[in-house]
Image (cartoon, rainbow, N blue to C red):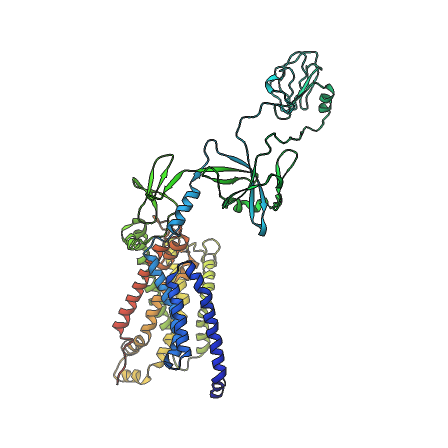
Length: 623
């Protein structure tokens, strides 16, 4: 061993040390700009302090003990002290769903999201495009809101069209002179002279005059006095007519992103014969096959509009500008609802609220220091204090009963199998260790299946029909039984070791003095066992007080507890805290969960300190 150590001394050890410190300092140099950009001053101080301390102790020739302590101290700081400090800091804030970012971010989000469609809102034809890097942008062409131009493409005013020259594709009732020819695609009632012949696609023949024909595909159409053209249309000719470019040119097209609208030169816009934008130079048209995957992307696009609103997509081919409902006034730090006139003010707890109705607030809010409010709500808020008291009591019952039952059964088995010369002693001990050798979470999942009401092996084999997991009482019994199965092997092992460590002379002396077996156990063995096992029993209590896996994997904290949307009948404090932080129906409340975590820490720490002090398990033996 000494030869091996000597090989890694001197120059090789110095090289390894320098490489290690180089990597550490390189990582620190890389991380410092990131921490500065996010103004994370606490982590910056910790990073710089730990890096300098590591360099000082490992490169210096003095403070030899520090070389062996510094790495452990840094790891302790990173994995213990920082999480504890962070949890304490969070407990005094409103950090929760809707209160995550800064106030500036909340104001921007409220302004962006508090919009609605109003009368006369500007609408756009939309075409999704791919920019560089497959970034989705939108080609937007404003749809004019002006009244329909009543002038036909050939210069004829619609008002000049004789009523006796009208043809409709989808029918409708038309006035016609006896000399008119009327054609409908889906029929309808037409007035016509008996001399005319009219052909319908889904109807019979109509009376009409062969002298004139007017055909429209979706309403108003083209006037034609050419009978031949009428006959051509009757023969099923092409009904789609190309749209010529208007005299003033096509409406302008813009490329829309979350940053705003950028106009596109008319020459870079490609259109089809109907005037619809089909592409923009420099961008790739999104294939229609990709449209189903664009839902989330299009929903996130909010383009600042020219009228102070935000342009959002409506489907895949159109968009509309939404107008803000609330307006922010930076001078007074308030939001005003322009429809109702309600003024929302900063309530000092991370939200803009209606002073006349505190429950009326604008979302999202922001992260704010709220002092002891989370701790006060545990005592004063019925929605929190009621379930908390119930869960608090059950947690103590669960932890205490688990320790007592597992210790009693484990010690009994240890005494029974501690008899010298017992046949099969090693086999019995090996069998009792099996539950301890199997990972606990696997065992809990297996037990969840065994205790199933309808298909579980226990109810099927016994015919009991007990609702092990869905009745509050039996669910608690199930948790204790499963924990007994998992905890007995541990208590059996430590009790066996403690029994074998008791000098046999003490037991023999007690028997010589006339003590019976039970008296020997109560007066000699048990006191000596408790001295050795008390720290382990305290540790077992602390472990089961926070035994999240067994509760959450077996019952999920259920069944549901009446009057609470979060806590269940078998929830202990740690699973209740988890639900508040991550699985609550109303969102995540990290601030309240951190406050409960601190209370759990204080409870376990206090009980542990009292137990150690009263049992004198950690007393120093001095000669």
